[in-house]
Image (tube, rainbow, N blue to C red; front, side, top):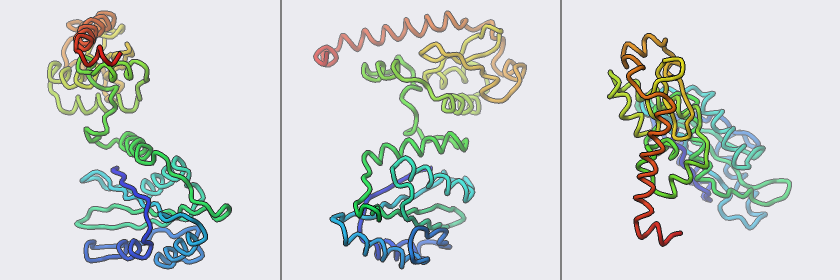
Length: 281
């Protein structure tokens, strides 16, 4: 789910925009909570009036929640996303509004929070909200099993031979998200019909096809973590073997780890030979 947000003023203009039916076939005011008023424009006026008692000019926080194309998303998923947003951004307990728009059968949502804390009459700060929303959006793709846009790919899930020096060091320090590993393996499986076709996109994501200790097919990460292909895609071992062939024809996990290390070291040495890398040290 793509999340786009801004801190803003213009409560009346935003309220009228959210209620416009010219651009949307259906508009539904799903929630108005934490306000005295129970209608959208009334709540917007309240938020503005409260802001006059502070020095805050951008007293609203507006987020659009756009699900992937061709996905029918339940109301509860939007609600949960809004709950997570306010939890992680420090807006929990703040008055909010949620409006659904539907156009050509596709539904998306807008959520608006008042930033003004009534108890302190100060605005809730929103540091790094863009990066936090990006992490939330990525989690939503993983939790709901949606195909993730390339821009959301974790930098750790990349072929280490194509890393820059900084990316290599970062990937070595950080752990892998098992949910994203699972989603990545499933996508590579869906787009392939044999072992080479499966192994190539897998390596581009920093995972290497190998023979596991139990003579099954596994994926090995640059950290040497081992993931069962059958378990990741929810298939039986014989079904995996039918598509990928005999796992004995692949490197063992130990040999794969050595292979990753050797090819990655060559890539790192090439980086260190570059003047820019040497000057940065």
